[in-house]
Length: 119
Length: 111
Image 1: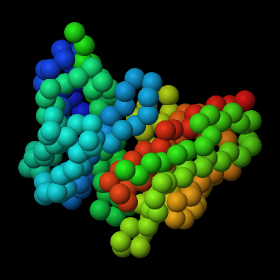
Image 2: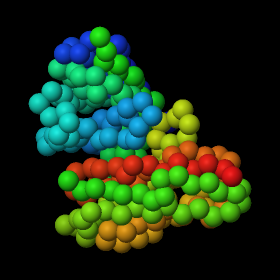
Image 3: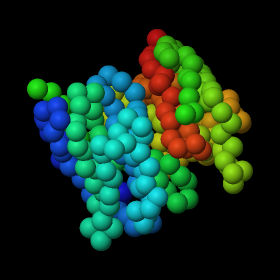
């Protein structure tokens, strides 16, 4: 069974940092590109970052470019999102989602982890 | 950036009746490989999103055949042949041809 399990969400002050993790199981992690998608409370979905199977190329949405860094460790089946200079409008549930090499974008999603940025 | 526009934003449907959601992109979604990377997702209340349809019309494993996707170029449609209670939620289209962009979402409720 495919599983993506995010962790690391917390309450953090504006300007602070946080590192999210997403542990994958049930499939060959290294064969899949990965993404982070977020959803602000009561709002829609926003894609924020992509990383290829071999960590290059990497892409970011304009809203997080220069503040967030995506990375992966294929040996540990883990995806990361380092978030710096956090702002109140970064408050959201953060999901990791895989890109199947066969069927494409966002075929599997994790359960999400909540990041709250507030003073 | 490619903008994805869904309509309607809210849909109230009688059980057993059909439903249709439109998604329009601001640019053609035909990629250089000739494929169209348009997907549909369902998000039930309190749950993570789940992909229903990929590349316009391919149903994901386990998705009931009452769900179907169609369209080309810039205009796409998700249809539910007969709405059931478990279909309540928000539906999103998403393009993966030019980076990745979601539509605003369409909330489906039972009348």
